Amino acid sequence: MKALVCILLLLETFVFVVQQQVDGGLNENEISQQISSEDGRQNPPQTDTLRAEASTDSHQYCDLGIPDIHAALRELTASVTEQKENIRELTATVTEQKENIRELTATVTEQKENIRELTATDTEQKEINRALETQLREQQTFILEELKKKNEDREIAFSASLLESGEGYTGPFPTEFTLTYRNVFTNIGNAYNPITGVFTAPLKGAYMFRISVFGVGPTTSAASIYKNGKHVVMAYTNQPQSYLHSSNGVVLILEVGDVVYVRLYPNTRILDNWNNHSTFSGFLLFALREDNLCKM
Ligand SMILES: *[C@@H]1O[C@H](CO)[C@@H](O)[C@H](O)[C@H]1NC(C)=O
Image (cartoon, rainbow, N blue to C red; front, side):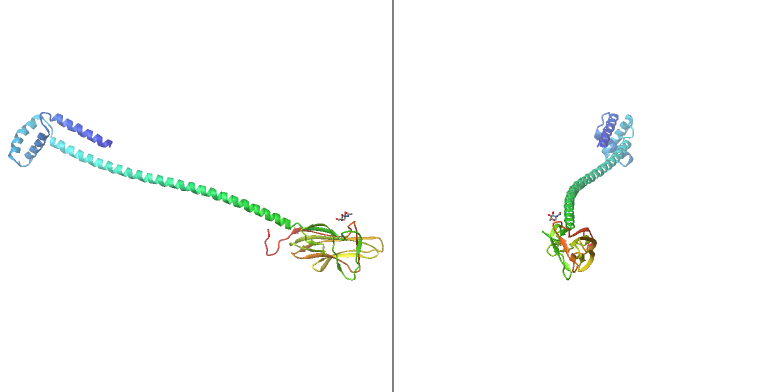
C-alpha cells in the first residue's frame, strides 16, 4: 500500500512539473492535440484541420523550449507500466502472505487441538494410575491376607499327656496298643486327635515328634512312634525296681495326610498321673513345597 501511495505521489509531482513547464495556456486537450499533430508530422496527415493546426502549433511548440514531451510521456507510460507490474507483484506477495497467515493460523489451531488432546490424555493417565494404585493396594492386602492365612495353616503344634485325670497304668497287652493321649496341653491347628491318638499332617513339611514313657519296675515300659503303620523310634526302659523313665524323638518329613501315633510295646506298661509323666508332642518345624504344585 505504501508503495502504491508513493507511486501516486510521484506521478502527481511529475504531472505537476509537466504542467508547470507547459504553462502558457495549454490545457489537456491542447496537449493531446499537440501529440496528434506531432504524430501528424511523422505520419501522413489525416485531416486538413489537423494539418492546419499542426503548422501553427509546431511553431509555438518549439518556441516554448519544451523538451520532447512525447518521449517524456512514453517514459511516463513505461514507468506506470513498470509500477503496475510492481503493484501486481506486491499484490501477489500480499496474497501469498495472507495464504501463509492462513496456514499458520491453521497450524496454531491444530497445535491447540493437540494440546487439548494431550491434556485429556494426561488426565486419562492420571485416572489410570489412580486405578492401578488402588488395584495394587487391593492386591497387596489380598496377598498379605493370603500369607497370613497360609501362616495360620502352618501353625501346627500339639502336646498331651496320657491321662486326663487320676493315676493309672496303661498295659500290659499281648499285642501293640495305640495310645490315646487325652490330657491335651496344646493343639494348635487341631492336627492331633485326642480320641484316636493320631496326628494327621495337614501339609507337607518337616515335623518334630517326641515321646516320654514312665513306669515302675520290674515291668518294662516301652512305646514307639509310628508313621503310617511303621515304627520309627522307640523309648524303652527296664529295671528290676523303682521308677522307669525313657524318652525319644524324631524329625519326620510328612506328606499331607501322613499319620503319626504312638504304640505301646507288647507286654509292657506305662504309668501316668497328675504329674503328666507320659507325654506325646509334635510340631511343624517348617513347611516344604509340594511337588508339581507351587504354593505361596
Ligand atoms: C498336668 O496337666 C494338668 C492339665 O493340664 C495340669 O492341671 C496339671 O497342673 C499338670 N501337672 C503338673 C505337675 O504340672
